Image (cartoon, rainbow, N blue to C red; front, side):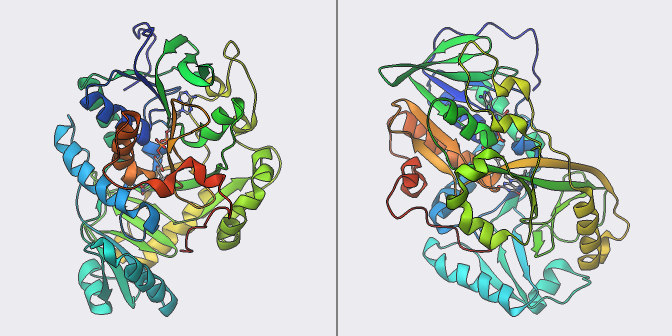
Length: 437
Ligand SMILES: Cc1cc2nc3c(=O)[nH]c(=O)nc-3n(C[C@H](O)[C@H](O)[C@H](O)COP(=O)(O)OP(=O)(O)OC[C@H]3O[C@@H](n4cnc5c(N)ncnc54)[C@H](O)[C@@H]3O)c2cc1C
C-alpha cells in the first residue's frame, strides 16, 4: 500500500475512525469491517511505516507478562484465522521460539516464568542441554538448557501488516494513507468526529492506535499518558544455512529465520533513549524500568531525534507534528549491530559467511509496566486506546485488534483485558512493574 494523491475524498461520516495503520490499527479495522461496522482508518504516513514493519517478526507467547498472556494466546488463534484470508504469503511459520540459557540465573528465570504460566496450559517447557543441541545443531557455545514453546511462530512483518490492511479493505474498511488526524471533534465531551489534515470525518467512536505518537495526540487534548519511546536497531543478513525453524534468543543475540533465507538479527532490550521533556514528566512512573534496564539503555541528552514527539499543543486548523514527521525513521546503531553480528557468529557458526545487508532503527512505545493500554478513556466517551505495546505488539496485534473491535461494538472481549485498562494509571498504589527479564 502506498500513499497517493489520487485518493478518493474523505467520507463525511462513518461509525468508527481508527487512527494509525500499524498492526493494532489495521487489525482493529479488519475485525470491525468483518463485523459489518463502517470504519475509516487514517494513517499519517504509510501502512506499517513505523514499528509494524521494523520488528523482528516474533509471534511469542513465551515469557510474556502474565497480565497479557491470555490475550496473546488468543492472538495466536487470530493469526491462524487471518493468514488464510490474506492475498500474500507472509512467511507465517509455526516453528517455535527458544530462549537459550547460558547460566543458572537464566535457567532460574525461565523456570520461574514457566511455573507462573502453568495455569495457561501452554506447550512451553524447559529443554535439557542435549535437547538444545538437537534443536540448534552445531553451536559455538554449550547451553545449560532452554525455555521452548513449539506453538510460537514467526512472520514477515513488512508483508503481514499491509496484507491485513488489504484484507480489511476487502471486508469494507476504508483506509487513507498520507492522512494525519490532527485532533478530535467533541460535543459535551463526547467524541463526534476527527479533524484530519484533509477535513473532518464525523463518527461515534475513535480508536487511537498511534504507536509512539499516542502520548503526543492525547497531551494535545489535555490527557496524560505515561508513554515514552526508545530507539531499537535490527539488521537482516544474506541467505545462510538453516540453523533451526525456531527463533532463538540468547542474552546477547536474537535470531529469526527469514522467508528469503537470511536472518533478522538483533539484541533484546538494547535500546537508546532520548531525554525529552516527557521523560521528566513521567520520570517516577518509569523508575522501575530504568532501574532494571539501565545497563542496556543508552541515554542521550541534548537535541532529541524525535523533536516532533516533544510538541504539545495545536488546533485542528494548524499543522500538527503528525504531518511534519510522516514516518519515524531513526538511524540504526551500527556500532551495536556490529557487536551483535559478532555475537551471532560466536553462538551460531553456521552464520560465519552471513553478511548484514540491511540495517534499520525503530521507535518503540514503552509503558512504565511494559504492557499495552487497551480500552476506553472514560473521561472522553467514544475514545478508545490501543497503544503502548512496549516492544512486543506485533505478535499480540491481531488479538488486540479483535478485543478492540468487540469493545467498540459494546461487547465483552473474548478474553479478560481488564489489567490493560487506561484507568490503571490513575489507580492508588500506582503501576505494578513488569517482572525483570
Ligand atoms: C526493532 C523492533 C523489534 C521488535 N520486535 C518485535 C517482535 O519480534 N515481536 C513483537 O511482537 N513485537 C516486536 N516489536 C514491537 C512491535 O513492532 C510493536 O509493538 C507494534 O508494531 C506496535 O504496533 P502499533 O500498531 O501499536 O504501532 P505502529 O506500528 O508504530 O503504528 C502506529 C501508526 O500510527 C500512525 N499515526 C500515529 N499518529 C497518527 C495520527 N495522528 N494520524 C494518523 N496516523 C498516525 C503512525 O504513522 C504509525 O504508522 C519490535 C519493535 C521494534 C522497533
